[in-house]
Image (cartoon, helix red, strand yellow):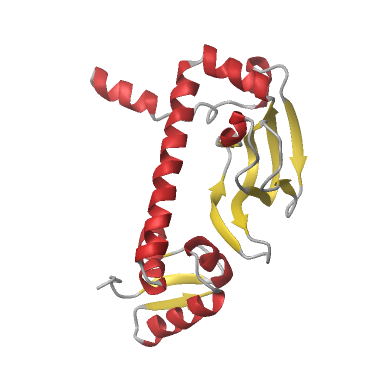
Length: 220
């Protein structure tokens, strides 16, 4: 392995991925561990708070919603990852966070996050990289919603998330039509109609909420 490969790999390491609770407490003594049950709302969109949350175990979901309760899901966040960085500017929370599976979080106060930024270049680089990726993802979402039909957005979503299983078939993890709709900005009814059409034409099959890809899907 040459020097450039080592540098590249180092820059790809998530700062907290290999940190256990003891290491985090040593790094940030002012931080604290908090547990949440499944379904608990950790952050509500519009809240005024500024802590950073590192996931020690479990999984959470980030989403946005309107006054009628309609959701647009931004994604899942898992152990070793963190959330809450956008509120470091002192503004309101840009999304809500709900617990998908019981989790334990290490909560870092805003003042300590500033210390991490100043004293740990790796953390600063990772934080900047995350913010840039969020901007790119937002631009991609705007493009898809503005220029792609619900059918094309669904096909794109399946193609990007399907993985080859032990049986050699391409399949997506268990996910409901409501969750898919929240991810791509379409109603559950629209997702149901499109998936029914794809299944009837032999492109996909649905087994125990898993989408099995039977034939290549394209947006032509």
